[in-house]
Image (cartoon, rainbow, N blue to C red; front, side, top):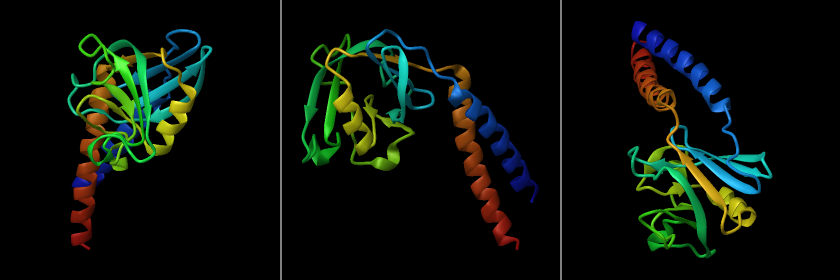
Length: 182
């Protein structure tokens, strides 16, 4: 019972802290259309003319260094309603980023997915994944040449996000144990 109560208390505290951290919106990097991605909390912020237009949940690299960080430009846009890539792993839209090691925009991109449950998690090989409807919406808004700023996010974001996931696992185990004792 104490195990369950401790896990629940940790979960509540971390949830409140994460809510506060999630509410902090980054500044737009430039006027016009721009995107900011916070890898730690897996959020994509869309700006137009310096105003925040939309916040999307995304998936980023399963390891911290897989998704590149810095300022990049969208240089390739590809759409196919039948799906892109083997088994449609890129969903139906691809927006390729020009990075120092991929000047053609084919290595890293913002794209859809055939795994919608991965959104909001750190699971990719380096790209930024979005849900099917979100990527379609973003694709229609964002022109080639759009600035994409990818930030690591703060030390606090990473560790509290990890702690929250850990406390959820503890809470689940504690609840299962609690049910066994009833």
